[in-house]
Amino acid sequence: MQKEKEKKTILFSLFGDIERYTKESMGTMCKLAAQFDKFIVGDKTRREQFRLVLRINSNGGSMETAIALYSYFRNLPIGLTTVGYGFVESAAVYVFLAGKERICMPETRFFIHGGGVSLKAPASELNTAARKLVAQQRLLENIIADNVGIPLSTIKKWMLNGKSFYAEEALEYGFVTAIGTNPICEDDSDYTYLAERW
Image (tube, rainbow, N blue to C red; front, top):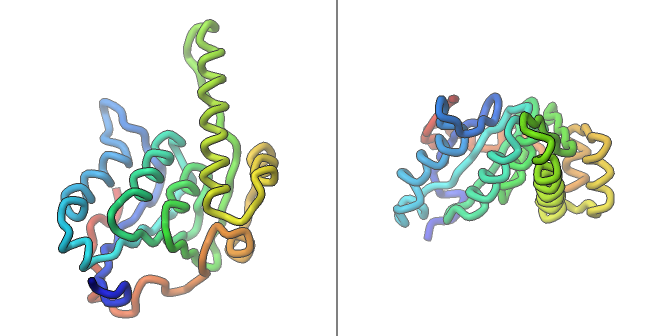
């Protein structure tokens, strides 16, 4: 098996909103999964030759999609490095946490907050919506707690009031494993681009 430093890099980007799947749009989840199911998941040789690097600059979007992406990336049969540029906020934080190695630029800003819902439904459905929101909130809290060195009680307070922080604090809290200026590789010829942007 190839050593990690000898592997070529599959570099791809998540810039902009994290979209839900709709009839009009494939959504972020479908686009990413389609790329990897075809290129990596079914090919053991490729898994041994490549490593994945996901660049993220996003103010967030669909929490449901972010949770699905977190689960998908965590269970890929290949290591993932996430790299934060600019903004890693809201739903994007959970995609970022899917990385086994998590790097950010010195200027990167993170922001976490509690969930919310915009409901266009009869009042009779409010209880169901509230239960789903509480369950989602607990799941988001546990994803953070499982990946950083912060007590769950502190995470709950942060999510209730909203918490913004930059690279140095992110490293202190355990959201990132390193702060870097050139975290991918020095030789651009090592890059294999799957997608620059959607």
